[in-house]
Length: 90
Image (cartoon, rainbow, N blue to C red; front, side, top):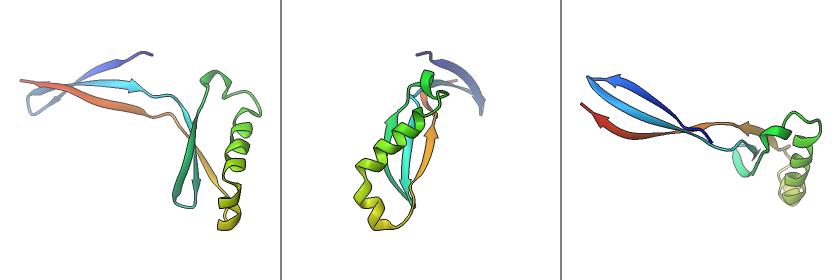
């Protein structure tokens, strides 16, 4: 995986940031509660049925909880990037 560096100027100090790409994940929520996530294969996301199959796996895993709550689960594809401050100079 590639990492990216960016230098920002803040109060005459250079802040060096390291961007760390994280793997894409399919996250499952039930109401406001986060239940679980599954890593995604970026090359398969555009294939029809790939995300649906993963959703069905999660729904099967949490079938009792979903049935007792009476609400439908929601899904979110997370492709976020973590940013880590390496050092301040100046």
